[in-house]
Each structure stands twice: as structure tokens, then as C-alpha cells.
Image (cartoon, rainbow, N blue to C red; front, top):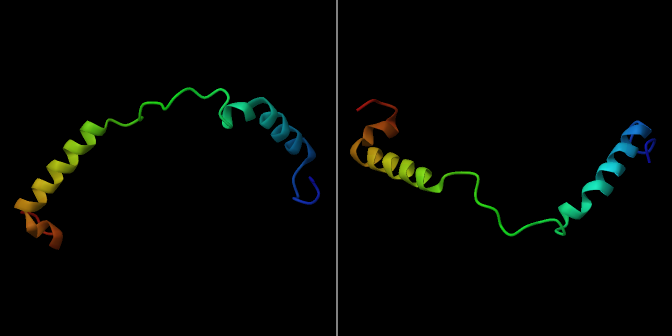
Length: 67
């Protein structure tokens, strides 16, 4: 396989070991329920609202000019 894909044999062995150690976690046996999002959705929604409001009051921004 290493010759076929032009990879060092040690790399194949390393990848195989990593797969065998972590495959259960990848395929769900070690997974808990859905995790919390890593971003603050409230802050993002607030920023979207702020930018939308800004665009409503400043249509010249779309023409790359300052208000």
C-alpha cells in the first residue's frame, strides 16, 4: 500500500494505529449527546441585526462610500 500511494511504510502504520485507537469515538460509541455550539448565537444574531440596521440607514455603504 505504501508503494501504491507513494507514502512511507511507517506513515501507514501510524495511520492504522490512530484508526484503531480512535475509530470507536468517530463512529459513535464514545459520543455523548449533541454538544453545545462553540459560538455564541445570541452575539452573532445581535451583530447581524446591528449590521442590517446600519445598512438600512446608510445605503451609500453599498456604493463603497462613507455615510
